[in-house]
Length: 186
Image (cartoon, rainbow, N blue to C red; front, side):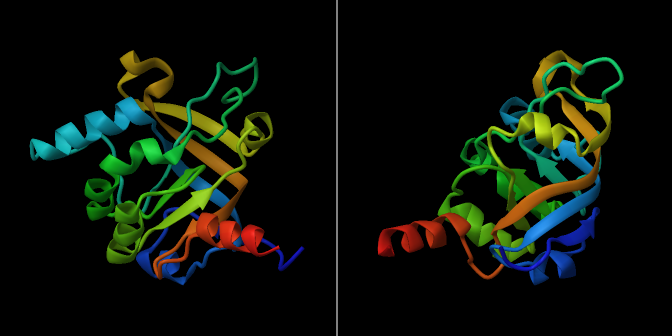
């Protein structure tokens, strides 16, 4: 099964992000942002106008997800990853502000892979279809911005041992390409 997962905490430093490699299993603890398509579009519009975002992204990890309503006593409902490729057009300006990681599922564009190396960030994959299990690793949730976006509003969550795989690293590693090559050769 390979080595034990590495426990890391957010915020992430550039040095830590640059040390991670495709295929490493991680257990994330600390804070993360949650944002999807509409929130990303709004962030880029704000950055494009030269304005400051209403929350800090430097050192942060953003989880591409939209939670379902929380059951009583729980901070969130099911919260599984959404397809990351939809956020690809919005990635570079956020990385330029110091974003260090993104959690989602699926392939990323060549431009995102280049930006990971340029800015010292990582792409992390969470297991699709396991939103209820992943939600068990979320200790709290706080609305940060744009409540009118409903489930696409920006949240801050507190993670405790949130399981991810490094799917894209700063040296060009791509878990999806490597996995496809392995699968085709068998």
